[in-house]
Image (cartoon, rainbow, N blue to C red; front, side):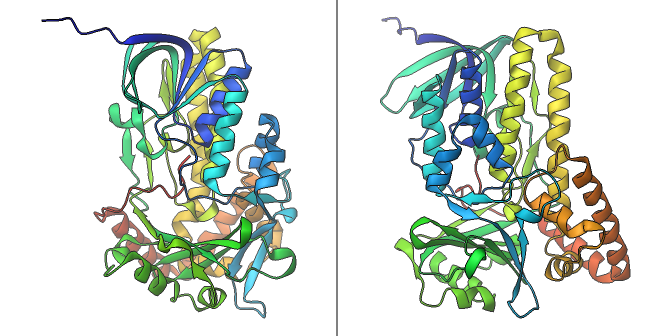
Length: 446
């Protein structure tokens, strides 16, 4: 019997699994620090992703990466977010320029397939060996500075990589979290989504034209995101119980769902669904038991994913990746500090997620809904919320104080309407326990 040929072996400092925003950010910054980086993306760019709305706090990261001009050229200017309201206009605008921290006064909305491709190409230009069509099949760790990755390319080649560190940015595949049995379902919140792209939808007038618009309906919330070339991303994030009622085609169900918001539906009069392509996804709120260990770290959706009502996915992914790069760099130079650095990184990331989650979990409840429909800037609480919407929830003490104060005010109003608040909480927890099998298209993969 002939002996099987040994797989080709390549050696690098850091292997990055995944070519979304988190993986590209990590690969770029590690290569700039002089490390030999092999980045592995199983698909080929451009590949479809939803999650087109970026946050102002993304912009300083783009500037540090050196891609801000490219994002500006491909994006739609986003001055703020608006929420349905009982006033003459029918909505309230939360303009990013009114934030109380140091966040930029605007953001952008992009086609994610173009945005992701640009970031991955930039990682390549920055010195990373960025490969497409190369899928990691297995990772084995011999010791904290020796991991072996089995890789297959779509041209039939198989090979192994020996890496000193592994950065998992595999998105919703959550490659290492699954292999290590770290991934856990979010037991406090679960949603599902249905969405498509329309041409000819009505934009907001004047300075609000680039806003992301958010609407509530009985079973969740809806979005309208202006994109280049007159396209509007439109979808609904629903309680799983509602999406399980779907009958007929996804297109028909999307149309029926969107009609449940008269204000949103009015803006779609005369608009046309592009290509009849409607996508459905579910079961996407989760996190992992830990963020890393000796020789490996999880970033972006490979670590955790939240409901996307505040467009947090790309920012949390890229911010977390930037922080993780500093940890990897120090860990490779000073291994004795690695455990403490990883703990600090995870604590920071979870703190930011908790601040978003407080609003996300309660967004469809009667108290939070009323607070967004009729905002009051007493004690600068509205401006604190704007700073949260901008993504400024890590390092600005004044913003963090306002968010803590907002929680107290929220609890006061919840006590005044405790029966409705309790009913919504019980319903949300029941939905989180519901068994639901949706599609696999990621809503905001990073």
